[in-house]
Length: 189
Image (cartoon, rainbow, N blue to C red; front, side, top):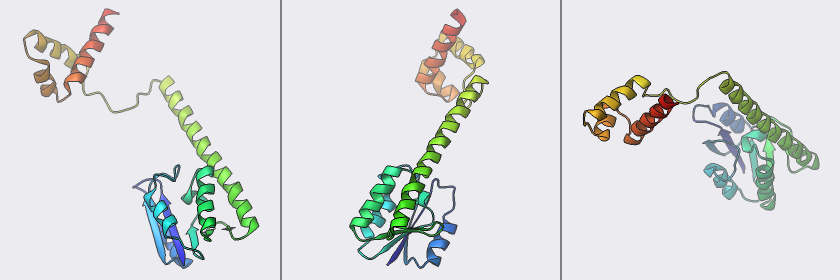
């Protein structure tokens, strides 16, 4: 039996082109999920397809990186399939574990895929560091500014409890106290 595995990294992405390609090669059952490919252990549908495959089956993906972005995980997946007598194939790459050339290509391409993942992470880290140097702030916009902190401190002076103040500004009590503490430290400096 031909079984397929389709995966994209996030819920906003579309699996349709992979499903069409897997259907075109004759996959009778297609497992699909929307989750990162960096770890095999957290992918429920990947584990389901590995359990589902039986001797003589063919496990299809459209491309190697749809199965895994980790060399270690990919080799573990292929070892699992090999131990069950299941061939691993990719529709868009000439990959087939039933031949020695196919096994060689899978090894080489998995290393390249892992390298690309590492490069992407390095570029992202470099971009974040550069943005921080330029003064770019990350995260959501603060709900509480200096003007509101001063108002909150006046409310405290008038006997209003911290919880009542926090409720008025729609923030947590600990957030209120953190902002007040931070403000007081900055004005003393």
